[in-house]
Length: 374
Image (cartoon, rainbow, N blue to C red; front, side, top):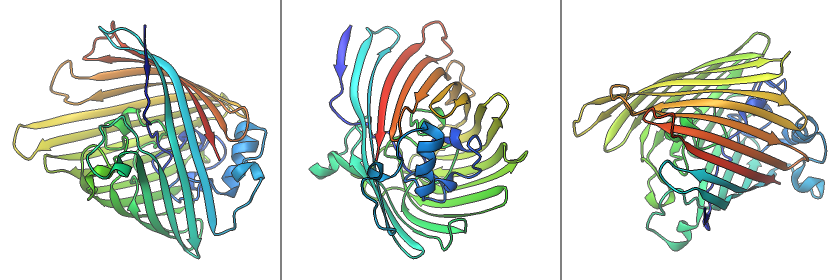
């Protein structure tokens, strides 16, 4: 067995597209913005969210910044995410690899002046993507998110402009989940956007228009321009949520039109949180070459044993061309997450992935992650 030590950083993401969607509904909170400073969810926790991260999720410790050793002034919010991983992978036809690598090193800051706030996330640049040519510092340090928000009240309408992921999909923290990986929400794919949203009793809506990153060496992946819309309705006394979404993304090479639905169900008696997403996408090419109908599917079930534990599994499907037999990719995974103390998470991920419909020789992945946040 070969030992592969990855000496470069994979920025796993803790921005607006990255959160723990299992906590919505299951912790008696209808909106992600109840616990996050961003009305769209994700990113820095507000004071209430920090308290919940200790009392509801971990059940011990102080969830405040620096464990309560110092309290920043009201106009300033700070945080950091550090994540490392150990594991192994087995690709069909290859020798097994043992993995050991740092996964994330991000700092977060938010400065507010009345209804206006500047939010910045910066850290060591991910290397799952090839490093783009450019200034040396940009090859190792990146600001994946930096945007200005205007919002007069915590539960009121908001507008934001800058670099961020438009609200779309289940917004899991796992950047390798198919809805993120194959729909333009992978590592360093944040565009520059102008977006906003509003919410009411039992519903919320978000929309954004975005443009391709004008500085290529600060990003990765397709440099698309377009727009998204996401509308969610909560039902059954806040235990169920249904959402519709649409996205248009245009690059110099292709155009992608996406429509989809997101479902969330909290089964309080059995303490099961169900998350699902189904997207249909049509890809056309500017130089001809026909049209590809595509599909992304995700269903995950998590047993919420809070405080302290979440254990669950998920099945995923990606079809890059529904007309081409044997092109699909399917994955089955198991997740076990422990929150022994405030600021600490241990996450075991086991995944089997079959390509081209070959379920008898899947690729295997195991990762044990240690996550610490300030």
